[in-house]
Structure formats: C-alpha cells, structure tokens
Length: 625
View (tube, rainbow, N blue to C red):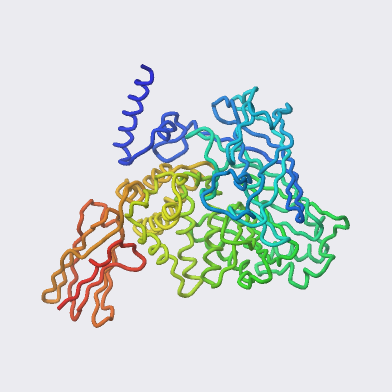
C-alpha cells in the first residue's frame, strides 16, 4: 500500500513538474527536487550537499619496469544526510585487465594485471583486501562493505597501499609514449561520487565516458629517477630543491613573463646538471586545492616552454608546454595556450581562468585533466589550435563546474566544442570548426542510431556517443547564443556558472537557470534539441517574384529549430543575403514568410549555409526562369 501511495505521489508530482517546465524529468531526478537539494529556479536547493576528500599520496615510478607503487591517505567527508554502509572506490587501471569490459578492442600490449592492493585500512582498522565478504571487485569499481558505518556529517580515514603496471602502449587516456615518456591518469584509488541523485556512482569505467568526481584537495609526492621531469596537476611546491640555479631562474622568470621562455631546449637536455639531485632519484611535490582529479606526465627528454597571463581578476596564470622535439607544431603551443586562456577569461565564457596553472603535455589524441591536458601533435595550425583550445575549454566544463559527464557528456564536450569556435576561426585563416560540426551532425541526424541528448551517455557507444556528446550540443549552444544575443547569453551563462561552479549541476539546473536569466521559457528550444528524436530540415515551400517584390515561404520540415539564411543569386553571384535566428520558430509555426522589395535580376534562391545543419538540402534551392 505504501508503495502504491508513493508511486501515486511521484506520478502527480511528475505531472506537476511537466506542466510547469513542459519537458520530461526522470523520477530519480524528481526525488532531488522533492528533498529540496535542487530547485525549479535552477539554484541549489536549501538542502543541497556534496561530499569531498583530502588525498595525500606518495608514489614512485620505475620507468624500466613500468611499475607505479603508491601509498595513499584519504580523508573522506560525508556531508550527506545518509548513513553509508559501504564505500565505492574506483580502480581505473583495472580496465587493462583481460577480463574487463571495454568499449573498444585493444592490443595485447595494453593488457596488465590491474591494481594490486597490498594493504587497506578504514579508520585505523586493517582490512584484508582478499576477503570477498568485504571487498567486492567489479570491473573498475571496488565496493568495500563496512562493519562500522559512516554517519552523516562525519569524516573517515582510509589508507591504501597499491601498485600497478603501466601499459606498454598508450590507450584509454594513459600509458607509455616512448621508452622513457609516460602519461599517468585515472591511476590512484579514487573515491566514487555519492550524490543527491543516485547515491553511489556504480557506473564502471569502460573507455568512452569520462569523469564525474567530487572536488577534493591533493598533496602528491612523486619519486622518479634523477633526470626525469614531472609536469602535473597542481602547483609545484619544491622547484628550488629540484632545478639547478640556471633552470630555476628560467622557471621563475616564465611565471612572470608575458613572452614565452624556453626552459629546456634540445641543448639543455644534454646537460646532466639540470637538476640538483646527486642521488639516483628525486621527488617532485605538488599541491592542488578543490580540483576533481589529478594527473601527470613524465619524461627525461621533453622540451619545456612556459609563459604567463594575468586574468581580469588580476591573477597570474602559469602556462607551459612539454613536448617531443619531433613535434614541430608544439613550438607554438605555449603561445596558443596563453591566447586560449586569455580568450576564455575575457570573451567567452568571460570568466577568469579558474586555476593557477595549465600545462599542455605532448602525448596523443586530446584529453583533459585539471591544470594539464594530454595532446597529440597536429599536421596543421588549425589542428594544433583546435585541440589546444578544445582541451583547455574543459578546465571550465567539466572541472570548474563539476559536471557528471559519465551521464551528461553534452554538458561538457558540447561546451568544449562551442566555446572556442570564434577563437579558432580568428587564430587560423580558413578554419572551419562550425562547418565540421555541421557535417558531423548532418551525417547521422534523424537516423535510428542517433539518440536525444538527454539519454545518459554511458548507454551510448560509437557514433551515437560522438554526435550526442560533441556535434549536436555544440551547435545547439552556438545557435542559443545566436538568438539570445551575446549580452543576454553571457548573462545566462554567468548565472548558471555562478550558481553551480564547485558543485554538481545536472541538465535541468542549466535549463532553469537560462530560463530565469533570459526572462522567458525556452522549452520550445530545449525540447527538440535536447529531449526529442528528430533532425533539422528547412525547405523552400513556395515563392513569388512579381514587380521587383519577392515573397518567399520557408517551411520547417524537421522538428529541430535552426536559423534561416537565404541567398539571392544572379549568375552565380550573391545579390543579397537574409538571416533570421532560430527563435523565428518559437511561435510553433511550421512556416516563415519573407518579403523582400526592390529585387531585380535574380535567377536563383538558395536556402541554408554550411554553418547551419540541414538533413535534406535538395529542397533548398529554386531556379527562377
């Protein structure tokens, strides 16, 4: 009976929400509004909470054996109103175990035995990692069943000693790049998120979906053989103990310089006295506050450039590039990174860069971590600027904003696509980031493999995931900015980011915040772009050209609202261009009528643009006879 009553209450509650917001909210999300951890105004509710951890990690890396050994002290803060009967710890390197689930095939060189835990204690009580009644291993997750529960508003102490083999190759965001270069990410035993939506995050890491972490504090000591350098998340605490005087001077100079300083050149790499250490190893110490993760790169033969930039908040940001000598494009990456951070800080999102440092480490592909990104070398300036700006954009989304990109990758990757559009076009003549995203979206839009953005990302794979995470939301945010106008768009974006930075926003927090800042219900836009199956398609329904007056009727064939661009042609030359933003469709009308006076000598009407997606372009052109 109680179950029926609860179901009835949830049903009517959901109906009320649907009538208020005019779009769907899942039942597990509705519970958060019922508990008032979230609000329909888009603000954190009066009962909002989130957990966090303090990590103190001491580790060593042996490049010859590729073995990483670590000892970790975690202070876990349970700020929730719940008593926790278990903890969930992520053991990311277990994705390399032969038996683990993965979203893609890997070579044998990528396989390892995963994480080996040699000791584990909870609140000073030693537990046996081999006790299957306590330790429940499931892929990359470890559930530890607690005899002594974690009370609300309390903290617990966890100590773990562990080791794993770094894969012989690089895949799934970490690994070996050459015999003495490694990028180490998704590596330490990490507390999973316990939140107000789902409780513990039990989603396994299988390769595609990326981060959802609490904001935590890190103190990390990394011991490596003398001659190796570490570039890392956080602020380097002991450069004076590591670098010899000449190189320490260059490093300190770069931290205050508006121009790029080369700290390690190819000639410097031949100098055995770069470091002060006389022993076989040296230990780099880093500290990072209120960040969702920690990663680092290491090598004994990487070049090192650095520069700095002062934000509008009058904070100087240290910016570096560490790279192989063979990566010729990386000579300019420190500069590109500085210009990227300047653009983000001053123009879009026009919020000062949130961290004290940012390093671009030269590995492969493109992958973001707090204060450091792992980027491959590109064959063109457009490619180098593109991957640099895209990965640095992630410092805002998901890191500054604490987004659950395991479920909502469009809240993170889509923004990293859209935010640098203007910058990428400005920095590289002929760059076409918008056109590339239009092409990627059009290719699959409306096909049965394309899912609405609101479908959780961890349920998608392949091209379904790529379009949902990147192309479709990137264009949706760009057209949103287009019809709101730059001023109103920034006002809305700032309201959303001010409310939710350092927290865990979900899509509805974004929608409700933008509605409030815009002063209107934007559900006419949210629903087709984010909630519905469908595709963009405009067509010329009819036209009449008489006595120099053109009457044109544009039909919205697809359900997704997009801008209208009309080009009037004469002998393959543009005579006149007309442009209307996507909000011409907010009335719900299926057609839009255009009248143009004083039109003479046109012989063709073209609807659309390479920057506007249209799934069926054969209805976009008429020849006037």
